[in-house]
Image (cartoon, rainbow over the protein chains, first blue to last red):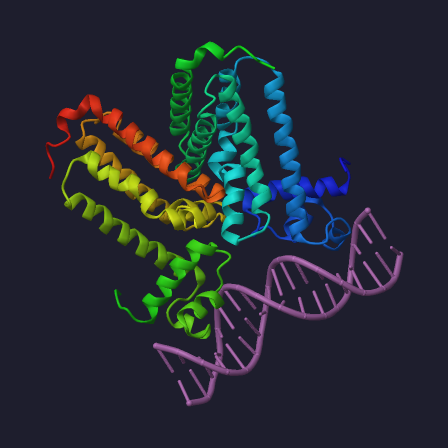
Length: 199
Length: 199
DNA sequence: GTCTATACGGAGATAGAC
DNA sequence: GTCTATCTCCGTATAGAC
């Protein structure tokens, strides 16, 4: 694991193609061409397409955990950290307008396919949900932290879906501004604990 | 057109299967089995799979226009009519939790496939966007009516995406309540015109 | 209009040489 | 580990009988 060899190249290429073209629409030929290997070589690394999907989701789970841990380690207030989350919509604006949110579109496709890996992909959402929930707890919204986390998650997903259809950068910026404003008002009455317990 | 014969049966079955399984994952065999005809019989009615998709989108555009016109004809205030829109999330809660929003998931899939029919499917969104925009104009929010319409559309899409992943009915109800509350505050300062010009 | 039979290509997957 | 060759199944699409 963690090699930069063929196996990891396959996972990287598959993750990219699954995002840009969708899981079902991506064939072994696509991935093989992207990596520059033959189709047959594939089965030395993965016994089936579902195994590649598992590996891709696993890698993305690991990378997401690292990113969230970094945001946490950077310090600052919970509000500042949650702005990092919201700001992903700006930072990834171009790919989102082309291919949607990597998490939302994957879960949506797997749900339609009735694919068993949906549960694993859903953990990507859960990672953000839990992390956001922790931030709201730290910000003093202990009782409704999870509902607030889900709300923020839903808002960002909605923006991603419409961004993909309308390709409207102004819309994205406008919604991001509104989400930040919402965050401010949501945290305002409980501002007392925003900087405390910043472990 | 508008016959209840085989052609319409095919469109109905295809629309249902495209929604539940996705467009790409639905084969002629699936549709033929659902209608109870042979695969070969298909090509008397549609020359290609894309033609079925066009017919499905066309039917859904027509039905959506009828629905919006009915909401308009029902009278009431713009706020009341927009509650009909928000309430779709409750009325269709079960299928949404299983298969997502019929509009959002179709547009998302077609975008990933790079399918030319995306533009037509996007008109489904535009229909709601324009209708909601009109309501906001009637409610006195002339200057930012379209932005408000997009916001409401995005909120509902976000709820649909997370509902599909987490299958949480409480979350849906909670978000719907918040959307209704948002609508109230958004229209409150311009309440003077809510009942006027109710053509 | 509806059927059966079939062509044709592409998909996932396997075997075995190098 | 990587390749070529091949298998099998399933998808869209066509031809032609009834």
